Length: 447
Image 1 (cartoon, rainbow, N blue to C red):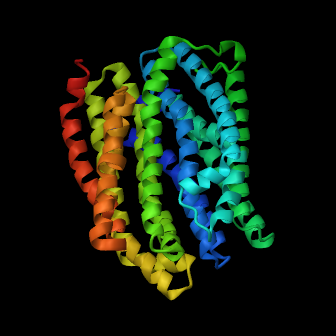
Image 2: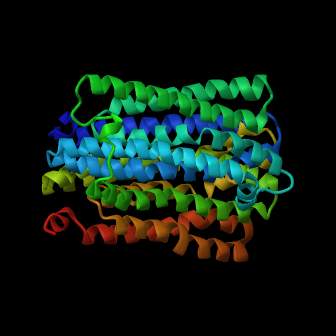
C-alpha cells in the first residue's frame, strides 16, 4: 500500500498521487459542464440560471462529506506513516458509517425545506420552479453524493488511488449519458439534469462498496468494514472532526461566497446570471484541477509528517506548488485568448457570448495563484493544523470577499463584481506564503 508514499523520486510521487486526483476532478468538471451544456440546449436562460444557483447547494452537500472524507484522510495518512494500521482501519470504518448517517439526515432536511433553500440561494420569480425541481432530485441523491465524495479521499489515504479515480469516472460517465437521455430525449430540463447527477453518484457509490468488499477479502490491514468495528474512540473522532470541519468549511464558505456573488449578479438579470454560470463552469477547470493536485498530494504530506521526514516533506511541498503554478499559467493563456470560442460552445446568442467571454477574460489571471493557495491550505490540513487552514478559508470567502464584492459592485457595477475573486486571491496568496514561511517543515516537526 505504501509504495507510492515511499517513492524516492518526489516529483514522480507527486505526479502518481496528483494526476489521478486531477483526473478525478477533471471527470467531475466534465459532467458538471455537461449538465450546463445540455441544459443550455433548451435555449432557456432561466434554466441555466437555476443550475448555476444550485451549484453552491451541491457543494455544501459535498462539504459535509469532506468532514469525514478529508478529515479521515488526514488522520489515516498520518497513522499509517506512524505504522498504526489498526487505528487507521478503525478511522476508516468510523468515517464511512458517519457519512452514510449524515447523508440520510441531510436528505430529510433538504426535502422538508426545499422552498426556503431556493429563496436563500437567490431564485427569483423567473427561475424559482426550475430551481426547486433541480434541488429536489439533488436532495434525493444526497446519501450517495456524500458517500461517493467522502470515500474518494478515504481511498487515496490508504493507497487505493486507481480505485478512487475509476469510481469518479464511472459516476461521471453515467451522469453524462443520462444527461443526454433525460434532458435531450425526454425534455426533462433541470429535473433531468439533477436526476442524472444523483444517479451518477449512486453508481459510483455501488462501485466503491464493491471495492471495499474485495479489499476486505484481500485482508487489507486498513479496512475493517464490519459494523462491530464501528466505534466512537475519542482520539479518532476528535482528530477527524478537528481537521474535517475546517476542510468542509472551505467548501461551505466557497458556496456562501458564490451565493453572495450570485445575488449581486442577479441584480443585473437572469441573462447576467446565465453568462456568469457559463463562465464559472469554464473557470472551474483550473480551479478544480488545482484542488485535485493539492488534495492528491495531501496524503503524501501527511505520511511524511507522520514519519518526521523533514527533507521529504519540504520537497513534496515545493514540487507540488511549482506544478500548480505552471498548470495555472497555462490556463490563464487559454482563457485569455480563447474565451470567446469557449463561450460559443454553450451559447448562440451574440450578446450572451460577448458577455461570457468578458467574464472569462477579467478574472483569468487568478489561475496561477491557486497553485500556492490550495497547496498551502492542504499542507495545514495534512499536518492537522486545522486553525491555519480555517484562517485561510475565512479570509478568502468572508473577511476579504464580502466587503470587496460590495465595494466593487458599488463603484464599478457588474465588472467590479466579476473582478472580486482575482483581487481577493492576490492578497490571499501573499498571506499564504507568509503563513507557510512561518510554518515550514523544519519548524513544525520540532513542535
